[in-house]
Image (tube, rainbow, N blue to C red; front, side, top):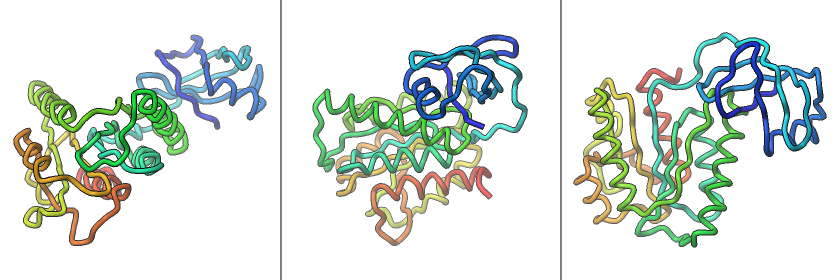
Length: 257
């Protein structure tokens, strides 16, 4: 069954609408029309079966038939990847693969050693692309929500963001960890930190670009409450690091295997 995300909330017996690229895909590629059924996921992450009432490339009108039962496929731990902006299309891979395994949010970060220096137009275009990739990967992997992809920020702004997020978590009685894998950290492994912080509900993970993080950035991260950690003795590509770290977090949280 084809699955599509809609904005707003659905309910059995009500109506819903699909617009934009999905509407064009349904009419042009899938050749679906009135009477055909598909699955939709609303803003609350609830899944419904719906029937096409009318449609064109501009928009598809749906009659919501019933809610589809089943366990939530969203992880209990909220993971944010703050990815040092890499070269080429590597960020595409970071977003796609980590969306598939359950990451909840991405923040592209300009670091001291990031090579791409994008102007505002290029940043907007890239972020729009990453948001499309996140939605496509969510559909493919059967997720019930699309991860957020925030605008590109400088490193200092990213540190301010995680500091404020950690404060919000504490105010809500939730445990939040900030992980900062660094190749020069050899005494603490990521699993050690996760076990010490048992009961965590949110984890924010900094991932360096191709050249890694500088000493100044690592010191800045520690001042903002981040914990330096090691991902092991082998050097990983930047597009591999986030996937490895997210997998470890989800496993330790009981979300894999």
